[in-house]
View 1 (tube, rainbow, N blue to C red):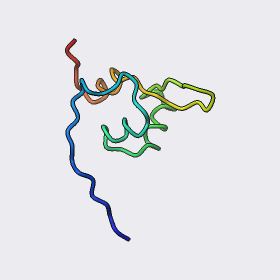
View 2 (view 1 turned 90 degrees about the vertical axis):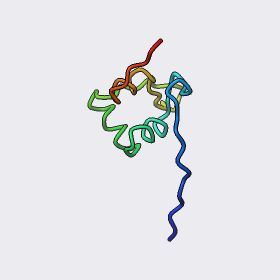
View 3 (view 1 turned 135 degrees about the vertical axis):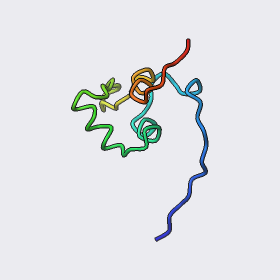
View 4 (view 1 turned 135 degrees about the horizontal axis):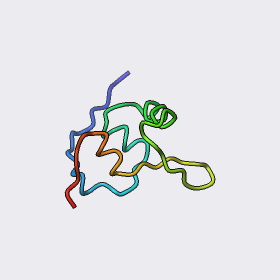
Length: 73
């Protein structure tokens, strides 16, 4: 079994969309997508449900606040 190395890229907070997917949030916070879902159930990271499947999206402001980063407008 081989491990694929992903190139390390820096992401600017201003480049992020206003609504983030579970995978995007998990990547930013360096946790698993399952952890993000659990935090949502506990109210730590509220999700917005979209479409008929109920996909989760997370507001960028909430995620940056969780990171302890403030956005300058």
